[in-house]
Image (cartoon, rainbow, N blue to C red; front, side):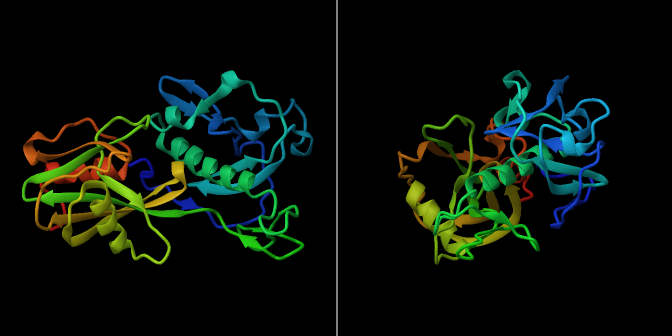
Length: 281
């Protein structure tokens, strides 16, 4: 999965750090990041490369906010300012399938933080300008005291099994056209296990039992925390698609599973676990 960093430690503890020329800059416009691309590999700009030769960071055309550290390398978000050529921008749909993993992960996490900061410039309760908290990763309203934390949406990925068969679906009306598993977001007041049962029932008309948690994935492209479950069919295998959500849905035997699925996601890993008979039982 895209967040597997080959032993590198992701340190996202909040702190105020000043940038150094050798640190990496995360410069975003919408869902695109400033980066160069060569032979399928992304390279982010270093902070020292964003200013003119001999200038200190205080005179750069950007201001910076510490984001996180990966291994021994620090990453900083820009806080507006500075003209960026569109030809130098790479969208998340492009970079998520590139390499190296460390850079792709940094871009994805940085983009999620960037969206959150941009969406919370003003207080949603009184309209005042929001400020960064001085003690934690949060935005605080100086007038009414409203405090907001980075957005994380819990969601489920569900592998519905029936012996040696696995339920696969395809989304309706989305750019992603590959096979996937049943998925959906948790609702207020609902346990994550109830989310599994509800999403399967709503999208396919099926009922499930024997839920087994597999693992989670921070899918920061949509500000989500995905929780993967395997479960068994309970009752009829007749599929009734929720057609505004899904375009296809069907049962596939373990030996005949299509390879047309995501290679970087929890969904793809769970399909492959089932293919090789290594799913939790």
